[in-house]
Image 1 (cartoon, rainbow, N blue to C red):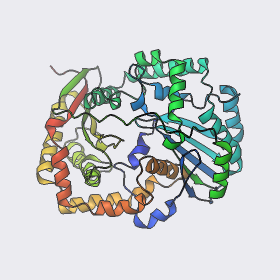
Image 2 (image 1 turned 120 degrees about the vertical axis):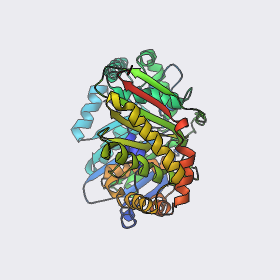
Image 3 (image 1 turned 135 degrees about the vertical axis):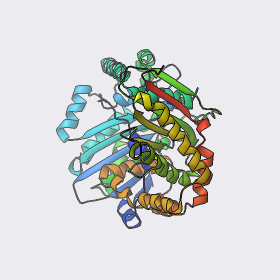
Length: 439
């Protein structure tokens, strides 16, 4: 099964708003650790006979070997393509018989596994999950099918201006770094990946001490502990041999790169490497990102580019924190003859916000939006499991959701101005345009 890329879920711990004060109790989790070292978070909810499972482990595309970019993606693609004595067809038949949905995804930092099951089929579901984690088959014919579908996807992606712009932008922001290549790899690198590459990548990823499991739904802690003791004993309890992620590079000066493409609109991507979660400016950065170009209809960029001038249907800016320093990226599409005007407006707005910061009322409105609207991102069992796996993987603490609102509300005008001066320097942004060339 083709994996989905969990960019939206990463954003929950990035620029997305947090639970309002009265709503965090419903998401409270309990924590325990298995004998194999896996950290487990449980959100009990017996309203419906459903259980959602989210696993994150240290196996994202940043760990792809040089020249074999895309191996994390293929490993995720093949996750449910057979395990133990069951080939791909048999394994997926068992999943279908019990109504179990199981898939995997490769992000830049993590390899993620997701499972949905009825609580009446927990034993069967965790048994199949355990087989996929500890005894994957990785048959040759499945690899070839995964390879051909991935190469086909890459060829189709070349027809999309925004994909090409994002591809080039990350290479410019992270030169020579594992964050700089697309998770899916390239046609050339995917063609070089062998069965042994996938098997070795999976083995290195599935070590208990680097795995986090979050479970939400109709299961008690006692039952979950028993299930994990029975089914996950084959997980390697040794620490992973993977070392820390290399420091993200600092590119002193921005550059402009154009890709010629016969497209009705030009895609624009601008980005700069910002900060990680441990940075003291992390929460002011979340507020700044929302005010400058975040979701909703009230951001600075939306007002200047869409509302006042109608240069684009939409424009957004997002901060994507990673294990290393993550990027702050601005994205939009506009007519070819208005590209220069749009870029000028974005750069001008950067300069204004860096110089003046946000107005008092504007700041209060942004903080109110952030703290009051997060429940929309946390209103299903799937979202709760996904969020707690992120909290656990990045070690945000059991009180993360409770403290998030007060940290956002504590951001002052001076904090935002300080971060704006640090991040919103137009000369530091890498810029990519993909569309018709203006002569």
